[in-house]
Image 1 (tube, rainbow, N blue to C red):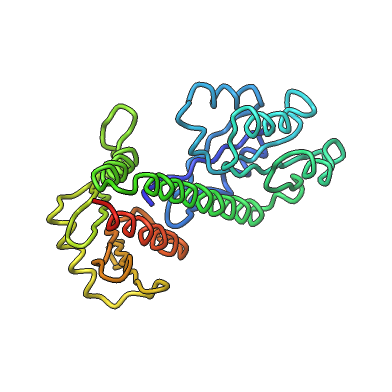
Image 2 (cartoon, rainbow, N blue to C red):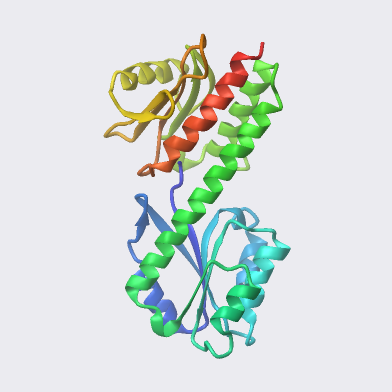
Length: 287
């Protein structure tokens, strides 16, 4: 919800294809967030990039990879390295080849864990646009839901301790809003996120607890859209988001209140609402 840009890797040794790709993807945005393109001319160069930027691989949304570069199978070997050696199942891998006879589509799809295949003759601007955009969307869905359900599982394991649940949620926000050195990520300085159970701010980042509560009250007055079975969500013109759910009979409402960085896709409130219902129920069942 706080991405400043989507990381996209292009691996191709043909300058003309690099130029075409750069122009086709210029100014492309997904959910209102621009792409950050990285270009490598070989498998070796791409591996060097991944090796020297350890923080880069987990957030790589899409990789568009040529097959024949320094060897006839360099691109396929790179895909295998990303999936098997680096255990990266989230990045969307697309093969683009100028020599389909060297790497037949069905053989490649059956043997390698890739997300798409097309020839360079098919690489129109529209094809590149739709492939990259759909790839980023799928990447975001995958990584977002994985993180949410991992947090849900961790919260479930802390049943009985509100302090531990609060610490876990706060630690998750701290990691999202800070880099590895502990500094606030510059692109997030206008972003905010709070978990509020009843009138208690359980975890908070980016603004004061008082501001979180007042923003909650203001957004909660708006009608919003329904969330099943008994919740709602609101997104206003300032990209402020409220999610409200009922965690069970006799318990106060639980809320997520945030200022987000981009256009919120429809699945985000649904997934967050389901997770929040579970987390708040565990919180209220704890002491």
